[in-house]
Amino acid sequence: AAPPSTPSGAASPTCRAHMVRLRNGLEWPVLGLGTYRLTPAEIPGVLSAALNHGSYGLVDTAISYKHGHAALADVLRARDASPPKLQWLQSKIPSSEQGYEKSRACALRCIDELQGCSEHLSLLLHWPGAAKLPSNSPLHAELRLGSWLALQDLYREGRVDCIGVSNFDERHLRELEGADGVAVLPFVNQVELHPLLPQTELRAFCAERGIHVQAYSSLGQGGLWSQPALKSAAVNLNLNEAQILLLWAMQKGISVIPRTSQPERVTANAQGLLQLLEDPSADFSPLAALDGLADGTHFCWNPAEIR
Image (cartoon, rainbow, N blue to C red; front, side, top):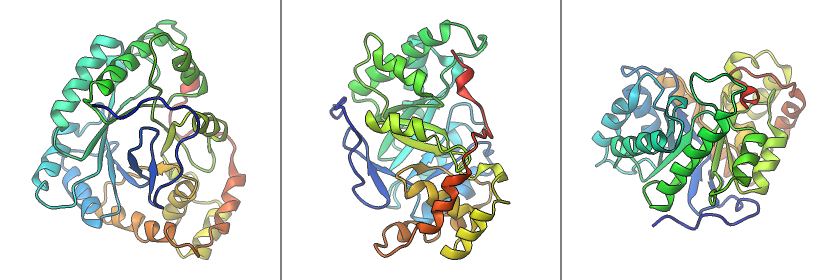
């Protein structure tokens, strides 16, 4: 059976430095591996590097990603006898499968394709809008509610361990919160988040409801590398710029899913980060300068345009 579903209030505090506890009581890694735009040929090397390093507790994918579930599942099942097993695998229902029946059928396919690949499975709605509709169509709200109710039913049936959303802003979440039939709010909201777009108000809204915020595009697609505050923090903490951007989020309790097509970068991104988070004497004050960079820049999509 699924864990308890809807206690109100803020999410539980961090249970270990490299883990947070979701509202349903399950531990969630602050460091995961993103796989956006990776090809089937790139998946084995990148995924093996993450699993061998031991710091990555989650792998994030989506039906719309071009490598497909099969490439991931092949690697993960081949390593099944080599502990420790991956803690979390996360996929996403695409905008083309919005609505209760389509989302439920799609989610069941995900569950079947990824069964046995990890200890826990998380499924998210990838986007608040439905495919092929104008951004201002009132059907978006109707279809995404149906999609959410499908995930809610699967969670209550014990078919999936975590359900959540991606790219939902406060308005989208408020609609879910007040909708008929919604008894379980998302456990996770995955959004674009970095020092230029810290999502401060959205994070506060989510924290009040026990919704964990997971960041994508944490590295700002290279748009942050010239910032003096970033370079200064890297020197002071003896880390590279990518690690600083990841650490900036992680030490706030935000989980991250950096992606790269280069196995060596998978290792370099994670090297020493969890140990630093677990060091009670670590001084994170050099990161504070990054808090002043916010200017609302989106490097990816802006979901606010979806009605």
